Amino acid sequence: MVLSDYLSLARIYVPEVDSTVLSDANVTIILNLAAQKFVYLAEALPTSTLFNAVSGQQKYNISTYVTTFCKVRPEGLWWYDSTNSSWVQLKGRTLKWLDETYPKWRDASSSSPEFYSIDGDVITVYPKPDTSYTSGFELYHFKTSVDMTAGTYPFSGSAAVRYPFLVNFEEDLLDYYKYRAKQIMGYDAKAEEALMMFNAKALKAKTELKTRTDLTDARAKSRTRNTRGMFR
Picture 1 (tube, rainbow, N blue to C red):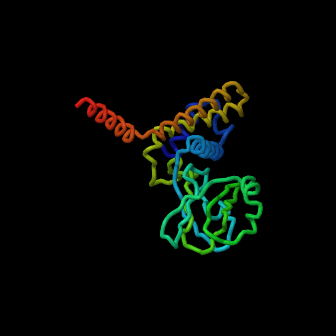
Picture 2 (tube, one colour):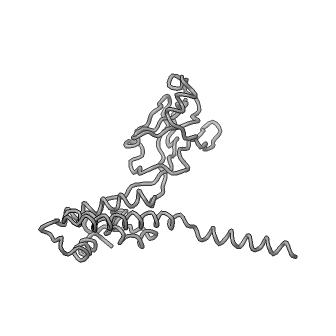
Picture 3 (tube, helix red, strand yellow):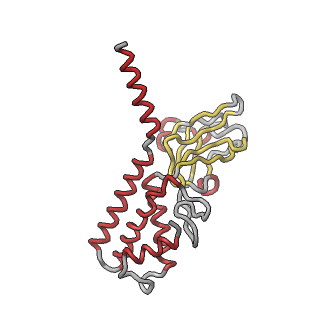
């Protein structure tokens, strides 16, 4: 569905909220908020971003270096060890852990990064790199959605890109619209019901998106082959 489809369905699903209550522009804002919340809860858009390692630089602002960041993935942050021509996964830690384990870490000499911490908008690495390297860091993260405008699809914000793996979840965004629309009309109980439905669908989508039937089938076939082999 593109934005115009959403606007039509919004009026059908909550007919008492017409354009005199919520303009199309305001409905669009709510729908784009719904998409942002959906991809956050469902962890729907996994990706990674390369950014430059700078010699002697310990802190990197996410808003500058990883502009599509939503939240970090389990794979975390990797650093390219140019000396050994290999990628190294850094260990995720908290600043408190660094303070307690390496009290002088802020003053330590530059070397090969081993740990990282994400705090708000800041990625901190320790030790700070001793060489600059183009695309020397790669952060695995979930990305945020791109706002819809006229003629564009949800999540991608593009008229040319419709994510096939998210098509079945596009209509779920309207549950968030129902929540806001009914809240505005003072239907608090129905609003909370719609919000609960939206959250439940997003979390269900999270589980479904992580299901790899190809790997599941492969494991099942492997177990079957091994079992058969025991009796041959």
